[in-house]
Image 1 (cartoon, one colour):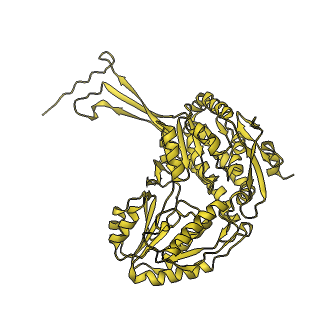
Image 2 (cartoon, helix red, strand yellow):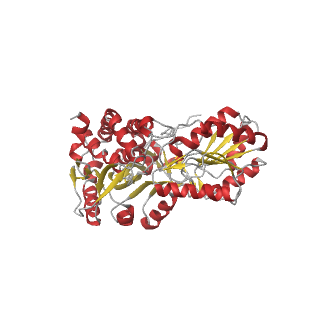
Length: 502
Protein backbone atom coordinates (compact mmCIF):
# COMPACT_ATOMS: atom_id res chain seq x y z
CA UNK A 1 0.00 0.00 0.00
CA UNK A 2 1.43 3.42 -0.99
CA UNK A 3 1.95 6.08 1.66
CA UNK A 4 -0.74 8.26 0.07
CA UNK A 5 -3.37 5.52 0.09
CA UNK A 6 -2.44 4.61 3.65
CA UNK A 7 -2.90 8.20 4.84
CA UNK A 8 -6.23 8.59 3.06
CA UNK A 9 -7.66 5.15 3.83
CA UNK A 10 -9.29 6.50 7.00
CA UNK A 11 -11.75 8.53 4.93
CA UNK A 12 -13.26 5.67 2.92
CA UNK A 13 -14.31 2.05 2.77
CA UNK A 14 -13.52 0.79 -0.70
CA UNK A 15 -15.03 3.36 -3.06
CA UNK A 16 -17.39 4.81 -0.45
CA UNK A 17 -16.10 8.09 0.98
CA UNK A 18 -17.20 9.48 4.35
CA UNK A 19 -17.89 12.98 5.60
CA UNK A 20 -15.71 14.66 8.24
CA UNK A 21 -16.57 16.40 11.50
CA UNK A 22 -15.02 16.67 14.98
CA UNK A 23 -11.93 14.89 13.69
CA UNK A 24 -13.93 11.79 12.70
CA UNK A 25 -14.93 10.27 9.37
CA UNK A 26 -18.57 9.22 9.35
CA UNK A 27 -21.17 7.44 7.26
CA UNK A 28 -24.54 9.17 6.86
CA UNK A 29 -27.49 7.76 8.76
CA UNK A 30 -29.48 8.18 5.52
CA UNK A 31 -27.81 5.05 4.20
CA UNK A 32 -27.63 6.79 0.81
CA UNK A 33 -24.61 7.71 -1.28
CA UNK A 34 -24.07 9.72 -4.45
CA UNK A 35 -22.06 8.06 -7.22
CA UNK A 36 -19.36 10.10 -8.96
CA UNK A 37 -18.56 9.03 -12.52
CA UNK A 38 -15.59 9.86 -14.72
CA UNK A 39 -17.05 12.11 -17.47
CA UNK A 40 -14.60 10.72 -20.02
CA UNK A 41 -15.32 6.98 -19.73
CA UNK A 42 -18.32 6.91 -17.36
CA UNK A 43 -16.45 4.67 -14.89
CA UNK A 44 -17.35 4.92 -11.21
CA UNK A 45 -14.73 6.98 -9.36
CA UNK A 46 -16.36 6.65 -5.94
CA UNK A 47 -19.41 7.42 -3.84
CA UNK A 48 -19.93 10.21 -1.31
CA UNK A 49 -22.38 10.44 1.55
CA UNK A 50 -25.85 11.93 1.07
CA UNK A 51 -26.06 13.75 4.40
CA UNK A 52 -29.35 14.57 6.09
CA UNK A 53 -30.63 17.88 7.51
CA UNK A 54 -30.09 16.44 11.00
CA UNK A 55 -26.45 15.84 10.13
CA UNK A 56 -26.22 19.38 8.79
CA UNK A 57 -27.42 20.60 12.20
CA UNK A 58 -24.82 18.54 14.03
CA UNK A 59 -21.94 19.54 11.79
CA UNK A 60 -22.75 23.25 12.06
CA UNK A 61 -23.18 22.87 15.83
CA UNK A 62 -19.72 21.29 16.03
CA UNK A 63 -18.25 24.22 14.11
CA UNK A 64 -20.05 26.75 16.31
CA UNK A 65 -18.91 25.08 19.53
CA UNK A 66 -15.26 25.32 18.48
CA UNK A 67 -15.09 28.96 17.41
CA UNK A 68 -13.64 30.15 20.71
CA UNK A 69 -10.82 27.61 20.83
CA UNK A 70 -9.71 28.53 17.31
CA UNK A 71 -10.20 32.28 17.65
CA UNK A 72 -7.99 32.32 20.75
CA UNK A 73 -5.27 30.35 18.96
CA UNK A 74 -2.49 32.89 18.20
CA UNK A 75 -2.52 34.14 14.62
CA UNK A 76 1.07 32.95 14.16
CA UNK A 77 0.02 29.40 15.10
CA UNK A 78 -2.90 29.48 12.69
CA UNK A 79 -0.55 30.65 9.93
CA UNK A 80 1.98 27.92 10.77
CA UNK A 81 -0.76 25.29 10.41
CA UNK A 82 -1.63 26.60 6.94
CA UNK A 83 2.01 26.30 5.93
CA UNK A 84 2.12 22.72 7.19
CA UNK A 85 -1.02 22.03 5.16
CA UNK A 86 0.68 23.50 2.08
CA UNK A 87 3.56 21.04 2.46
CA UNK A 88 1.13 18.14 2.66
CA UNK A 89 -0.77 19.37 -0.40
CA UNK A 90 2.48 19.47 -2.37
CA UNK A 91 3.48 16.02 -1.10
CA UNK A 92 0.21 14.53 -2.33
CA UNK A 93 -0.19 16.63 -5.48
CA UNK A 94 0.30 13.78 -7.95
CA UNK A 95 -2.16 11.50 -6.13
CA UNK A 96 -4.80 14.22 -5.76
CA UNK A 97 -4.27 15.45 -9.32
CA UNK A 98 -4.95 12.00 -10.74
CA UNK A 99 -8.10 11.73 -8.64
CA UNK A 100 -9.23 15.18 -9.77
CA UNK A 101 -8.67 14.22 -13.42
CA UNK A 102 -10.91 11.19 -12.95
CA UNK A 103 -13.64 13.25 -11.26
CA UNK A 104 -13.98 16.18 -13.62
CA UNK A 105 -12.11 15.26 -16.80
CA UNK A 106 -9.39 17.89 -16.46
CA UNK A 107 -6.10 17.08 -18.25
CA UNK A 108 -3.73 15.40 -15.80
CA UNK A 109 -1.03 18.09 -15.90
CA UNK A 110 -3.63 20.78 -15.38
CA UNK A 111 -5.19 18.84 -12.50
CA UNK A 112 -1.83 18.46 -10.74
CA UNK A 113 -1.15 22.15 -11.35
CA UNK A 114 -4.46 23.00 -9.65
CA UNK A 115 -3.41 21.08 -6.54
CA UNK A 116 0.00 22.76 -6.42
CA UNK A 117 -1.51 26.20 -6.94
CA UNK A 118 -3.66 25.57 -3.87
CA UNK A 119 -0.51 24.97 -1.82
CA UNK A 120 0.78 28.35 -3.01
CA UNK A 121 -2.47 29.96 -1.86
CA UNK A 122 -2.17 28.38 1.60
CA UNK A 123 1.41 29.63 1.95
CA UNK A 124 0.58 33.10 0.67
CA UNK A 125 -2.45 33.31 2.99
CA UNK A 126 -0.25 32.43 5.95
CA UNK A 127 2.17 35.18 4.93
CA UNK A 128 -0.72 37.67 4.64
CA UNK A 129 -1.71 37.32 8.29
CA UNK A 130 -0.62 40.95 8.78
CA UNK A 131 -4.00 41.85 7.26
CA UNK A 132 -5.40 41.09 10.71
CA UNK A 133 -3.17 43.57 12.54
CA UNK A 134 -5.14 46.26 14.35
CA UNK A 135 -4.37 49.94 14.86
CA UNK A 136 -4.78 52.73 17.37
CA UNK A 137 -6.28 56.14 16.49
CA UNK A 138 -6.19 59.25 18.65
CA UNK A 139 -9.30 61.40 18.81
CA UNK A 140 -7.55 64.68 18.06
CA UNK A 141 -7.07 63.80 14.41
CA UNK A 142 -10.43 65.52 13.76
CA UNK A 143 -11.17 69.09 14.78
CA UNK A 144 -13.37 69.33 17.86
CA UNK A 145 -12.00 66.19 19.52
CA UNK A 146 -9.16 65.84 21.97
CA UNK A 147 -6.71 63.15 23.01
CA UNK A 148 -9.14 62.16 25.75
CA UNK A 149 -10.54 59.62 23.29
CA UNK A 150 -8.54 56.82 21.73
CA UNK A 151 -9.80 53.89 19.63
CA UNK A 152 -8.19 50.49 19.57
CA UNK A 153 -9.29 48.58 16.45
CA UNK A 154 -8.59 44.94 15.76
CA UNK A 155 -10.13 42.26 13.56
CA UNK A 156 -12.22 39.37 14.82
CA UNK A 157 -13.63 36.33 12.98
CA UNK A 158 -17.21 36.23 11.74
CA UNK A 159 -17.90 32.76 13.16
CA UNK A 160 -18.90 29.73 11.09
CA UNK A 161 -18.13 30.18 7.39
CA UNK A 162 -19.77 27.97 4.77
CA UNK A 163 -17.38 27.36 1.87
CA UNK A 164 -18.96 26.06 -1.35
CA UNK A 165 -16.68 25.33 -4.29
CA UNK A 166 -17.35 24.68 -8.01
CA UNK A 167 -16.93 21.50 -10.05
CA UNK A 168 -14.38 23.01 -12.43
CA UNK A 169 -11.81 23.87 -9.72
CA UNK A 170 -13.10 21.88 -6.75
CA UNK A 171 -9.78 21.83 -4.90
CA UNK A 172 -8.30 25.21 -5.74
CA UNK A 173 -11.40 27.39 -5.49
CA UNK A 174 -12.49 25.62 -2.32
CA UNK A 175 -9.03 25.93 -0.80
CA UNK A 176 -8.96 29.64 -1.67
CA UNK A 177 -11.95 30.04 0.66
CA UNK A 178 -10.79 27.69 3.44
CA UNK A 179 -7.34 29.24 3.93
CA UNK A 180 -8.41 32.87 4.58
CA UNK A 181 -11.35 31.71 6.69
CA UNK A 182 -9.05 29.71 8.96
CA UNK A 183 -6.27 32.27 9.27
CA UNK A 184 -8.89 34.87 10.26
CA UNK A 185 -9.98 32.62 13.16
CA UNK A 186 -13.24 31.27 11.77
CA UNK A 187 -14.41 27.69 11.83
CA UNK A 188 -15.36 26.16 8.48
CA UNK A 189 -18.09 23.96 7.05
CA UNK A 190 -17.10 22.90 3.55
CA UNK A 191 -19.76 21.82 1.06
CA UNK A 192 -17.92 20.59 -2.04
CA UNK A 193 -19.59 20.39 -5.45
CA UNK A 194 -21.09 17.00 -6.28
CA UNK A 195 -18.59 16.54 -9.15
CA UNK A 196 -15.39 17.21 -7.23
CA UNK A 197 -16.59 16.03 -3.82
CA UNK A 198 -14.00 13.29 -3.53
CA UNK A 199 -10.92 15.40 -4.22
CA UNK A 200 -12.09 18.30 -2.04
CA UNK A 201 -12.94 15.96 0.84
CA UNK A 202 -9.22 15.24 1.21
CA UNK A 203 -8.89 18.62 2.91
CA UNK A 204 -10.12 16.80 6.02
CA UNK A 205 -7.03 14.59 6.20
CA UNK A 206 -4.69 17.40 5.15
CA UNK A 207 -5.89 19.90 7.76
CA UNK A 208 -6.12 17.33 10.55
CA UNK A 209 -2.52 16.24 9.95
CA UNK A 210 -1.46 19.90 9.73
CA UNK A 211 -2.83 20.50 13.23
CA UNK A 212 -6.32 21.98 12.85
CA UNK A 213 -8.25 21.01 16.03
CA UNK A 214 -11.40 18.83 15.83
CA UNK A 215 -14.54 20.76 14.91
CA UNK A 216 -12.68 23.69 13.38
CA UNK A 217 -12.85 22.24 9.88
CA UNK A 218 -15.80 20.10 8.81
CA UNK A 219 -17.14 18.69 5.56
CA UNK A 220 -20.64 17.87 4.44
CA UNK A 221 -21.58 16.16 1.19
CA UNK A 222 -24.93 15.81 -0.52
CA UNK A 223 -26.94 17.14 -3.40
CA UNK A 224 -27.68 20.84 -3.35
CA UNK A 225 -31.27 20.07 -4.33
CA UNK A 226 -31.70 18.09 -1.10
CA UNK A 227 -29.75 20.00 1.58
CA UNK A 228 -28.66 23.19 -0.19
CA UNK A 229 -31.46 25.52 0.87
CA UNK A 230 -31.41 24.20 4.43
CA UNK A 231 -27.65 24.64 4.65
CA UNK A 232 -27.40 28.21 3.33
CA UNK A 233 -30.39 29.43 5.36
CA UNK A 234 -29.17 27.87 8.62
CA UNK A 235 -29.20 30.40 11.45
CA UNK A 236 -25.77 29.37 12.76
CA UNK A 237 -23.96 29.98 9.47
CA UNK A 238 -22.37 33.43 9.76
CA UNK A 239 -21.05 33.87 6.22
CA UNK A 240 -21.20 32.11 2.85
CA UNK A 241 -18.36 32.05 0.32
CA UNK A 242 -19.55 30.52 -2.94
CA UNK A 243 -18.26 29.94 -6.46
CA UNK A 244 -20.68 28.66 -9.06
CA UNK A 245 -23.42 29.67 -11.46
CA UNK A 246 -25.21 33.01 -11.25
CA UNK A 247 -28.53 31.20 -11.02
CA UNK A 248 -27.43 29.27 -7.93
CA UNK A 249 -25.82 32.38 -6.46
CA UNK A 250 -29.08 34.31 -6.70
CA UNK A 251 -30.94 31.49 -4.99
CA UNK A 252 -28.40 31.39 -2.17
CA UNK A 253 -28.70 35.16 -1.74
CA UNK A 254 -32.48 34.87 -1.43
CA UNK A 255 -32.23 32.11 1.18
CA UNK A 256 -29.30 33.56 3.14
CA UNK A 257 -31.14 36.76 4.09
CA UNK A 258 -28.76 39.04 6.06
CA UNK A 259 -25.65 36.84 6.01
CA UNK A 260 -22.47 38.33 4.53
CA UNK A 261 -21.84 36.85 1.08
CA UNK A 262 -18.71 36.48 -1.05
CA UNK A 263 -19.65 35.24 -4.52
CA UNK A 264 -17.75 34.39 -7.69
CA UNK A 265 -20.37 33.68 -10.35
CA UNK A 266 -20.73 33.39 -14.11
CA UNK A 267 -19.29 35.51 -16.88
CA UNK A 268 -19.60 36.36 -20.55
CA UNK A 269 -16.14 37.86 -20.96
CA UNK A 270 -15.76 39.75 -24.23
CA UNK A 271 -12.47 40.29 -26.09
CA UNK A 272 -12.55 43.59 -27.99
CA UNK A 273 -10.00 43.40 -30.82
CA UNK A 274 -9.06 46.69 -32.49
CA UNK A 275 -7.52 46.91 -35.96
CA UNK A 276 -3.99 47.54 -34.68
CA UNK A 277 -3.88 44.50 -32.38
CA UNK A 278 -0.88 42.18 -32.81
CA UNK A 279 -2.53 39.28 -34.61
CA UNK A 280 -0.51 36.29 -33.36
CA UNK A 281 -0.52 37.42 -29.72
CA UNK A 282 -4.28 37.95 -29.91
CA UNK A 283 -4.85 34.53 -31.50
CA UNK A 284 -2.79 32.82 -28.79
CA UNK A 285 -4.75 34.60 -26.04
CA UNK A 286 -8.12 33.71 -27.58
CA UNK A 287 -7.22 30.05 -28.15
CA UNK A 288 -5.91 29.61 -24.62
CA UNK A 289 -8.65 31.71 -23.05
CA UNK A 290 -11.54 30.08 -24.93
CA UNK A 291 -10.48 26.43 -24.97
CA UNK A 292 -8.43 25.72 -21.82
CA UNK A 293 -10.28 23.07 -19.81
CA UNK A 294 -12.88 23.01 -22.59
CA UNK A 295 -13.99 26.56 -21.84
CA UNK A 296 -15.41 25.43 -18.49
CA UNK A 297 -14.12 28.49 -16.64
CA UNK A 298 -15.98 31.56 -15.43
CA UNK A 299 -13.13 33.68 -16.82
CA UNK A 300 -12.99 31.94 -20.22
CA UNK A 301 -13.03 34.11 -23.34
CA UNK A 302 -16.70 33.68 -24.21
CA UNK A 303 -17.11 36.05 -27.17
CA UNK A 304 -14.84 38.05 -29.47
CA UNK A 305 -15.72 41.48 -30.86
CA UNK A 306 -13.31 42.28 -33.75
CA UNK A 307 -13.07 45.47 -35.79
CA UNK A 308 -13.45 45.25 -39.63
CA UNK A 309 -9.75 45.67 -40.42
CA UNK A 310 -8.70 42.57 -38.50
CA UNK A 311 -11.84 40.41 -38.32
CA UNK A 312 -11.26 38.20 -41.40
CA UNK A 313 -7.64 37.44 -40.54
CA UNK A 314 -8.44 36.86 -36.88
CA UNK A 315 -11.31 34.43 -37.50
CA UNK A 316 -9.22 32.49 -40.03
CA UNK A 317 -6.21 32.17 -37.70
CA UNK A 318 -8.29 31.22 -34.64
CA UNK A 319 -10.06 28.50 -36.64
CA UNK A 320 -6.73 27.19 -37.94
CA UNK A 321 -5.29 26.97 -34.43
CA UNK A 322 -8.47 25.46 -32.99
CA UNK A 323 -8.23 22.62 -35.52
CA UNK A 324 -4.75 21.78 -34.20
CA UNK A 325 -5.98 21.16 -30.64
CA UNK A 326 -5.77 17.53 -29.58
CA UNK A 327 -8.94 15.72 -28.55
CA UNK A 328 -9.46 12.83 -26.15
CA UNK A 329 -8.28 11.23 -22.91
CA UNK A 330 -7.40 13.66 -20.08
CA UNK A 331 -4.90 11.08 -18.79
CA UNK A 332 -2.93 11.72 -22.00
CA UNK A 333 -3.14 15.51 -21.47
CA UNK A 334 -5.23 16.13 -24.57
CA UNK A 335 -6.16 19.79 -25.10
CA UNK A 336 -9.88 19.09 -25.32
CA UNK A 337 -11.52 16.46 -23.11
CA UNK A 338 -14.98 15.75 -21.76
CA UNK A 339 -17.57 18.29 -20.67
CA UNK A 340 -18.67 17.64 -17.09
CA UNK A 341 -22.02 16.04 -18.04
CA UNK A 342 -24.17 15.04 -20.99
CA UNK A 343 -26.77 17.58 -19.83
CA UNK A 344 -24.25 20.39 -20.21
CA UNK A 345 -23.25 19.02 -23.63
CA UNK A 346 -26.89 19.17 -24.72
CA UNK A 347 -27.12 22.80 -23.60
CA UNK A 348 -23.96 23.79 -25.49
CA UNK A 349 -25.28 22.08 -28.62
CA UNK A 350 -28.55 23.99 -28.28
CA UNK A 351 -26.63 27.27 -28.39
CA UNK A 352 -24.63 26.16 -31.44
CA UNK A 353 -27.76 25.02 -33.29
CA UNK A 354 -29.61 28.23 -32.49
CA UNK A 355 -26.73 30.30 -33.90
CA UNK A 356 -26.52 28.20 -37.07
CA UNK A 357 -30.28 28.40 -37.61
CA UNK A 358 -30.05 32.19 -37.43
CA UNK A 359 -27.18 32.51 -39.88
CA UNK A 360 -23.91 32.00 -38.02
CA UNK A 361 -21.07 30.39 -40.00
CA UNK A 362 -19.25 27.36 -38.56
CA UNK A 363 -15.51 27.74 -39.20
CA UNK A 364 -14.57 24.55 -37.38
CA UNK A 365 -15.99 22.08 -34.89
CA UNK A 366 -19.68 21.43 -34.25
CA UNK A 367 -18.89 17.78 -33.63
CA UNK A 368 -19.72 15.71 -30.57
CA UNK A 369 -18.81 12.24 -29.34
CA UNK A 370 -20.05 11.23 -25.89
CA UNK A 371 -19.25 14.10 -23.55
CA UNK A 372 -16.61 15.59 -25.85
CA UNK A 373 -17.46 18.61 -28.00
CA UNK A 374 -14.85 19.57 -30.60
CA UNK A 375 -13.54 23.16 -30.39
CA UNK A 376 -16.04 25.23 -32.34
CA UNK A 377 -15.57 28.65 -33.94
CA UNK A 378 -18.71 30.55 -34.98
CA UNK A 379 -18.40 33.61 -37.20
CA UNK A 380 -20.89 36.38 -37.98
CA UNK A 381 -22.82 35.84 -34.75
CA UNK A 382 -25.50 38.48 -34.27
CA UNK A 383 -27.24 39.90 -31.24
CA UNK A 384 -30.43 37.91 -31.81
CA UNK A 385 -28.56 34.65 -31.21
CA UNK A 386 -28.59 33.09 -27.73
CA UNK A 387 -24.85 32.46 -27.74
CA UNK A 388 -24.26 36.22 -27.92
CA UNK A 389 -25.61 36.50 -24.37
CA UNK A 390 -25.82 33.10 -22.65
CA UNK A 391 -22.77 31.60 -20.94
CA UNK A 392 -21.82 28.55 -23.00
CA UNK A 393 -19.32 27.07 -20.50
CA UNK A 394 -17.89 24.91 -23.25
CA UNK A 395 -15.35 24.94 -26.13
CA UNK A 396 -17.27 27.32 -28.39
CA UNK A 397 -16.18 30.84 -29.32
CA UNK A 398 -18.58 33.22 -31.14
CA UNK A 399 -17.28 36.16 -33.19
CA UNK A 400 -19.58 39.20 -33.18
CA UNK A 401 -18.20 41.63 -35.75
CA UNK A 402 -18.28 45.32 -34.80
CA UNK A 403 -17.77 48.60 -36.63
CA UNK A 404 -16.48 50.78 -33.80
CA UNK A 405 -15.07 50.68 -30.29
CA UNK A 406 -18.25 52.34 -29.06
CA UNK A 407 -20.34 49.51 -30.50
CA UNK A 408 -18.07 46.99 -28.74
CA UNK A 409 -18.56 48.79 -25.43
CA UNK A 410 -22.34 48.80 -25.89
CA UNK A 411 -22.50 45.08 -26.73
CA UNK A 412 -20.21 44.20 -23.83
CA UNK A 413 -22.22 46.26 -21.36
CA UNK A 414 -25.60 44.87 -22.48
CA UNK A 415 -24.68 41.56 -20.87
CA UNK A 416 -26.17 40.67 -17.49
CA UNK A 417 -22.66 39.55 -16.55
CA UNK A 418 -19.75 41.78 -15.58
CA UNK A 419 -16.76 39.64 -14.66
CA UNK A 420 -13.91 40.61 -16.97
CA UNK A 421 -13.28 42.26 -20.31
CA UNK A 422 -10.32 42.30 -22.70
CA UNK A 423 -8.94 44.89 -25.08
CA UNK A 424 -6.34 44.04 -27.72
CA UNK A 425 -4.63 47.09 -29.22
CA UNK A 426 -1.29 48.89 -29.45
CA UNK A 427 -3.02 52.17 -28.57
CA UNK A 428 -2.79 52.12 -24.77
CA UNK A 429 -4.45 55.53 -24.37
CA UNK A 430 -7.50 54.26 -26.24
CA UNK A 431 -7.38 50.99 -24.30
CA UNK A 432 -7.55 52.86 -20.98
CA UNK A 433 -10.43 54.96 -22.23
CA UNK A 434 -12.37 51.86 -23.31
CA UNK A 435 -11.52 50.12 -20.03
CA UNK A 436 -13.13 52.91 -18.05
CA UNK A 437 -16.38 52.40 -19.96
CA UNK A 438 -16.65 48.62 -19.49
CA UNK A 439 -19.00 47.48 -16.71
CA UNK A 440 -16.82 44.66 -15.40
CA UNK A 441 -14.71 43.88 -12.37
CA UNK A 442 -11.42 43.61 -14.25
CA UNK A 443 -10.18 44.67 -17.69
CA UNK A 444 -7.25 42.84 -19.26
CA UNK A 445 -5.23 44.81 -21.80
CA UNK A 446 -3.50 42.63 -24.40
CA UNK A 447 -4.09 39.47 -22.41
CA UNK A 448 -6.77 36.85 -21.87
CA UNK A 449 -9.25 37.03 -19.02
CA UNK A 450 -8.03 35.05 -16.03
CA UNK A 451 -8.22 34.64 -12.27
CA UNK A 452 -5.05 35.69 -10.54
CA UNK A 453 -2.33 36.11 -9.56
CA UNK A 454 -4.05 35.11 -6.36
CA UNK A 455 -3.02 38.21 -4.40
CA UNK A 456 -4.67 40.48 -6.99
CA UNK A 457 -8.24 41.63 -6.28
CA UNK A 458 -10.77 39.46 -8.10
CA UNK A 459 -14.37 40.59 -8.40
CA UNK A 460 -17.38 40.82 -10.66
CA UNK A 461 -20.23 43.25 -11.15
CA UNK A 462 -23.90 42.64 -11.95
CA UNK A 463 -24.64 38.88 -12.09
CA UNK A 464 -20.96 37.94 -11.90
CA UNK A 465 -20.38 38.24 -8.19
CA UNK A 466 -20.50 40.00 -4.83
CA UNK A 467 -17.52 41.17 -2.82
CA UNK A 468 -13.82 41.06 -3.60
CA UNK A 469 -11.60 38.00 -3.49
CA UNK A 470 -7.82 37.74 -3.57
CA UNK A 471 -5.85 36.63 -0.52
CA UNK A 472 -5.72 39.76 1.67
CA UNK A 473 -9.15 40.89 0.45
CA UNK A 474 -10.68 37.54 1.39
CA UNK A 475 -9.12 37.66 4.86
CA UNK A 476 -10.70 41.05 5.46
CA UNK A 477 -14.05 39.89 4.07
CA UNK A 478 -13.97 36.91 6.44
CA UNK A 479 -13.32 39.04 9.50
CA UNK A 480 -14.67 42.29 10.85
CA UNK A 481 -13.19 45.23 12.71
CA UNK A 482 -13.96 45.52 16.41
CA UNK A 483 -13.41 48.85 18.11
CA UNK A 484 -12.71 49.57 21.77
CA UNK A 485 -12.82 53.30 22.64
CA UNK A 486 -10.82 54.47 25.64
CA UNK A 487 -12.25 57.55 27.33
CA UNK A 488 -9.39 58.98 29.36
CA UNK A 489 -10.40 60.70 32.60
CA UNK A 490 -9.16 64.09 33.73
CA UNK A 491 -7.40 62.40 36.66
CA UNK A 492 -5.59 60.04 34.33
CA UNK A 493 -4.28 62.70 31.99
CA UNK A 494 -0.77 64.06 32.07
CA UNK A 495 -0.85 67.83 32.00
CA UNK A 496 1.71 69.45 29.74
CA UNK A 497 2.38 73.17 29.88
CA UNK A 498 3.30 74.71 26.58
CA UNK A 499 5.58 77.69 26.85
CA UNK A 500 5.87 79.85 23.80
CA UNK A 501 8.90 82.03 23.43
CA UNK A 502 9.40 84.78 20.96
